[in-house]
Length: 127
Figure 1 (cartoon, rainbow, N blue to C red):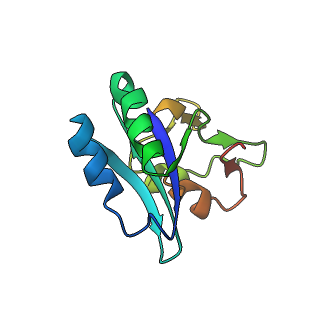
Figure 2: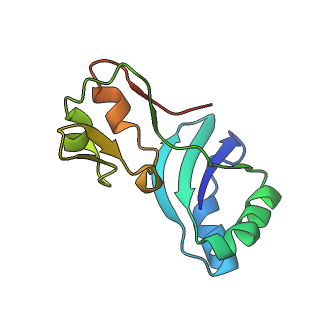
Figure 3: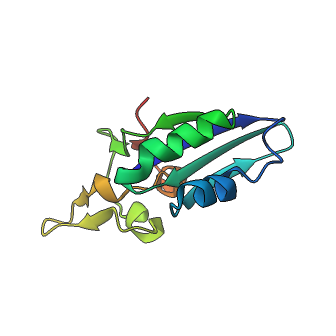
């Protein structure tokens, strides 16, 4: 399960991931992090069966927790150039037999690399 964690300047200096992992005995995989002096935003992956326990501990540490349920999407601007294939670290994209880009969205880790390289701005994360 993917979780988006947001926290403020009070929490940004705390080892929230380490403490949560130790308290719950759960491995927490950091997929993306943007942490500064005043705020932080991290996308983590946790085992589905331990997600509620992890969420409870994080909330106790004053971290805003949001489950990520939507994944990468594509609009009609796609020209099937394949740049997304070359940049994606988890092989979400592949060419089919008709040289069209197909997506396996369940593999997406929300890194955003494909969105940045798409020349037609066809890829996005739904709100």
